[in-house]
Amino acid sequence: MRGIDAGSLDSFDLAILDILQQDNSTSQRIIGERVHLSAAAVNRRIQRMREAGVIVGNYSTLDPTKMGRPITVIVEVRIESERLDLLDAAKRSFQADPDVQQCYYVTGDADFVLIVTVPSMREYDALTRRLFFENHNVKKFRTLVVMERLKAGLAIPLHNA
Image 1: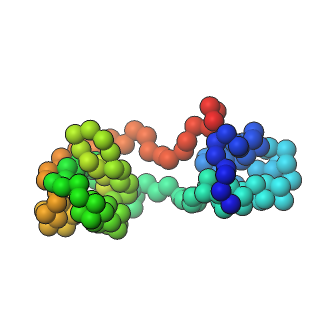
Image 2: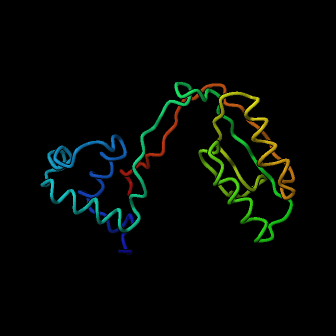
């Protein structure tokens, strides 16, 4: 079911999405009470938005420090060649690595920006060997170690949608 985008979402859809972004475990009954719809109507709307790809997953956000991964690293990666097969291989390797939480193909001085969490700098060193030094298409990478996590999330502001 394609054809749903921000312009075709009504105020009920946006209210439902806003609630789900804050707490995806909120029951459909509670959502219905908050947005003034029946639980069945909420269920139909959520299912429609899932099928259309508006809702792409349901996640619980964990504190990496409490999970034994206290080091967050932002890595800017420059590649040697943008030949499609080499570019796609780099994308696949970054996507497949479990230590890479987020990966963006970007414009500017870097080709990719990765957000990585690791338990130690020794583990980060192993990651650099695995993803960068062993990949002959990686020209250069720059490491930014996060000193303090001030904000982390994936919620999209919906008030302007």
